[in-house]
Amino acid sequence: MMRVRLKADGRIVEIMPNGAEKTLDHSDPASFVRQVRARCGLTQAAFAEKIEVPIETVRNWEQGKRQPRGPARALLKLIDNAPDAAFAALGGRRR
View (cartoon, rainbow, N blue to C red):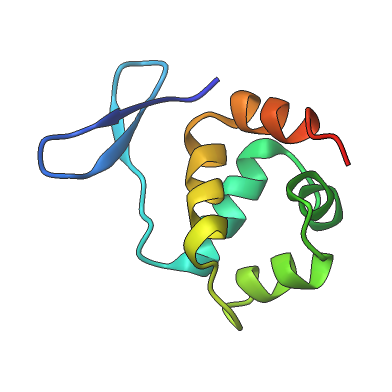
């Protein structure tokens, strides 16, 4: 599980096992989506299925053709910070 901390200057940093801090960069949306998905260890298809969007959407985000907006961006940030909780909540949906 990833440990993160919000710094006073607004940066979000990941706390590494050795105690070092690594700043998480959200300035490049395509890179951010790739990082989130990679940390989850999912393929584009599996990630798209988990967050209930078409695979083309994830591809477009990762290629920089489109940027996640509003609720999608909030969901990605939640998955980045608390993937187990986010996927548990998404998996608990009833159709």
